[in-house]
Length: 278
Image (cartoon, rainbow, N blue to C red; front, side, top):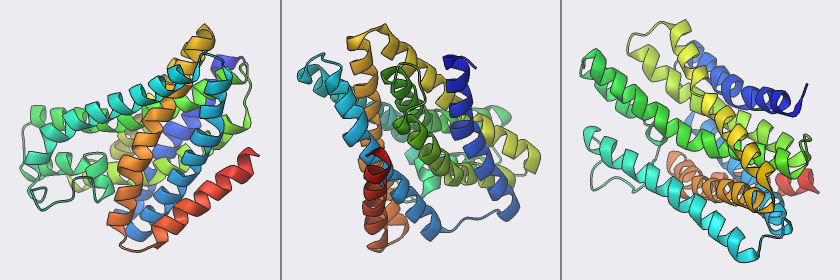
C-alpha cells in the first residue's frame, strides 16, 4: 500500500472502527458506566498529552521554522477549536433543561460533550424530521471538532516521519480508537432510545468517525508542503488536542466520577505515553 492508503486504513480503524465498536457496545447494553468511561477518557487524555508534548511539539520545533511560529501554531489550534466549540455550545445548551446557571461551565457527561443530549431532547419533544436532522448535524459537527484534530495528529506524524508509520502515529491511532469507543456508546444509546433501529444507529455512529480520516489527510498534506507546513500541521493539531484534553476531557472525567482516580488515571496515561515514545 502507498502512504495515503496506509494513512486512510490507520485512521479508519482509529476513527470509524473505534466509534462503530462503541456504537455496537451501546446498542447491546444501551447504557454505560460513568466510572469506566471517566477512567478510560482520563487515561487516553494522559497518553495524548505525552505524545503531544514529548513528540509532536518537539518535532514541530525540529522542523526549524522558528519557535515563535510553533507557539503561534499551537495557540491558533487552541483558539479555533475553542471558538467552534463555543459556537455550538451557545446554540445548543439553552435547549437542554438541566444546563443552566448552576451547571458547570463545561460538560459533566459524555453526552453533553458530543451533544447527543441535544439530539435526545429533540427526540423526547417528538420534533419534526427537519428538527431531528438539524440536531443530528449539530452532534456530527461537535464530534468532528474532536475527530478532525485527532486525525491531523496522525497525518502530521506520518509527514514528519517521511510517510512512514512511526511510533507516535501508531500510538495515537490506538489511543484515539480507545477514546472513540465510549464516544460511540454515547452516540448510539440516544439514537436507539429515540426509536431508531439498532443496526442503523450503529451504522450512523460508525460514520461519525469519518472526520478522523479527513483530518489525517489534511494534516499529512499540510506537512508535505515543507518545514512551515509541517510546523503548522503539527502545531495546530497539538493546540487543538491540548484544548480537548485540558478544556474538555479531564474536567469532564472528574465531573463524571467525583474521585481522585481520574487524576491518577491521567498520570498513568502520561507515564505510559513516555514509555511508549522513548
